[in-house]
Length: 364
Image (cartoon, rainbow, N blue to C red; front, top):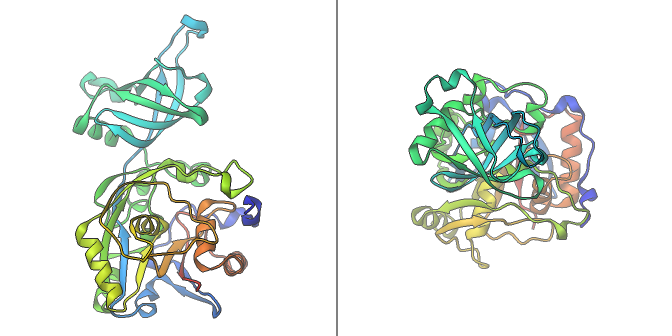
């Protein structure tokens, strides 16, 4: 399909810069293909599910993966002899001391460059320095950084100096602040590794989780570490030409067995977020049996895909011409989702990471 087919008009003022309070007060657009739309709130979720259904959450934890620093001055090889301010967004861990990252300004960086992350005030104690060497460079500003620190010491330094990696459409409007440390994290996050939040899960509160349990809806956890590639625009005209960035995920033996038992008993698997859905679809057999799974997935779901594991999907509203809008169009139907998004725009739903949500039922 043509990428342009997934475009739509989105007024700038519908991009949410802060979440609503409380989290479950966000609006929820319920989409049942062939039956129509319903405007509710996330707090209504227990009444929309059935006893015996299973919610699947992504328990990844967002790390403060955006680092500001200086490329050390160099004059050799045509350098200008000046330090250059740089910004790195860590993308994927490659080893105890290695990260793949997107860096700006990419064109001014060379293999062998030394980068010192953190402000001068941070560096009062050199033992807490966060320095790295650029050891490889790819197209599009993606680089490999070898840090001087390793393992837990590196983790602590990143957590101390890093900023929450707000999506570009928020970061362009306002700076990250301390409130984002709480807002851009699910209440059940526990596995460090993401550089973007699984945003559908941001709507859940301990009270809502308790009400879902009381309604007989079980809760299960998988882990998919979301990479910065989720924000990269598609640069092709045909969906067949696009290649996804790989992301690391895990489905445990216990979770796989529990979800298969839910299905066998007639319950539905309700994925909270496209990350949970993509991981389960990667782990499922063609017959729909979910297997324990560990590894990287680059699954790209477009209309025509046959879903194996997910019956219902809760997800926020996505960018025009994005891979995630393609995914929801595959799940509930292309025309259905075009109509749903037109309704969301017309009625003032808030879009993207801090925005409202939707509950999508699968098209036959």
